[in-house]
Length: 129
Image (cartoon, rainbow, N blue to C red; front, side, top):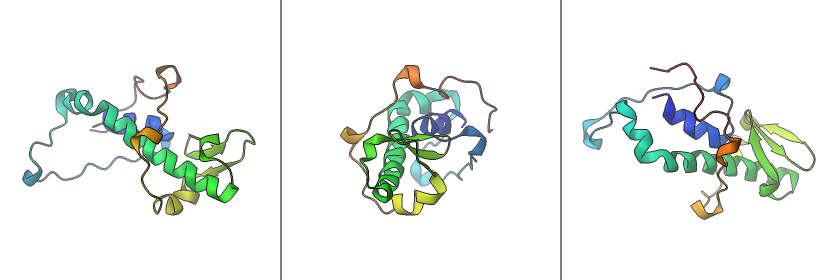
């Protein structure tokens, strides 16, 4: 249960100190929802990264619209969207409502972090179990 959000937040650019994990209640109609034994991570690692990167791009796009800049000039860091050329930044909370109304980007539009840029994946954090 800890690894799944950790993978997503890596690409999202979220700060683990500000992340709250809430376990959803399972429902038999969705089949086996067990997450022990790292099966969920092994089967869904790429999809989890893409989910986080999708949210990050949507947040960047929302901020970029307000700044009238290219969203690919922005990145997410510690719960902020940062415009790299100017250093201007805005909190996720300030753009999330706009981001939620944007179309979901295609996987081909995503730019996943390279392994050498990971700050959360593979790092020990307290378990949320």
